[in-house]
Length: 491
Image (cartoon, rainbow, N blue to C red; front, side, top):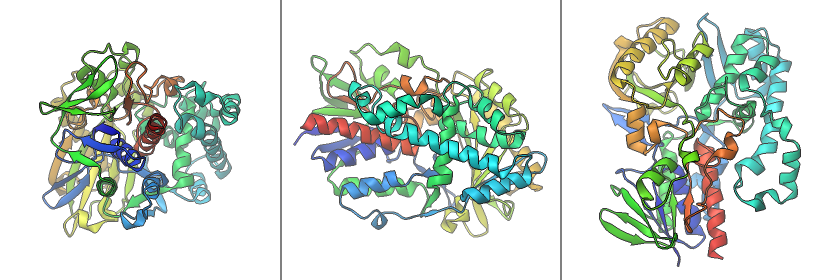
């Protein structure tokens, strides 16, 4: 039985382990932390439970697929419900828009609160679906770094339709042409942040993202997002995958540019192949000590990071809120300019508030709510994060209190904070960037690191820092691509 070692128990690492085990590999996962999940972890404090990282769940079919591959019923491991209301959007002038999952209802809602009509919204969503139809089978589900990926009719058809994915103008340019109202433009520009990018730089191809919410839907896993991690680990263990926790990997061992195993806690562990779910930057700089790193990859612009406040809230401060809520900056362009050009936090940031207790009462004590409050911030480049965090906290509290008409600060009974440096430390993400490299280039999809090493035989890469990108669905697709490569090797 061939031996596979996976470095990192993030969602892509666990998914790779499951797929490889189904294919007949003897799999061991080495994880530096005492818990699995990577960014898909949880925090428990003072009776409150928070999902530490991702809080939006789309395309659950990619999770279900892992159980089905193993001959299991996904619902025996976890359940999730589709949301009727995806998100509430709040603007500084008092306007609020409810993004309903139903496309017709959502279009009517936008038309009721902006100068844009429902037809324009429906056309936009249709375009989003068209981009998905072109890109999904070619750019998302296959390696872009293998010649064979381009030698089939489906790929040829997609390449001939390349202009239709709108790669030659920015999201903001495209959305400003489609809509008249600044509120509508801002709402759809926001989707660039789903992979840590800037809508004023990123290609309009990223307008594919709304399709994921309004076609496939947004979902809530019973027990919270971390139940996805729990379910996948349980499945992996049933498939005889071994998890080694508190086990950071020191080096990927090679012989004549072929993987022979890894060292962890001073011991050598042999393997026929190694999959790194660690950020590709640190895989090269920390673990491949005898290999010259690909400088063009390591120099790429990193995605944005996040500053997250985990607030235990007492009382009815958030009675007008739902699971997902966005409080927009009044000047979106200035906010992104601050993040990307000035490398600082904007004084009027767009604030995301997730409250899982709205659907999972056990996540907070009676009469309380668990607020996951996040703003987009630059990746760590040596800023004074203590000062920036203190200033941002004041700005966020002022903004939320103003919009809600209530004193949020006085309702906080528990607090934890996570910023770029903490994200970097906890998840081995270079500079605390959440999605690896940014997509602020029309060529970004082609410039991400491949899922297989071009110079080291038996070395593979999965996770948000490599192809096809960050976020739970794409991380799971990276595992699927790697598993396909491992299957070919095993044959």
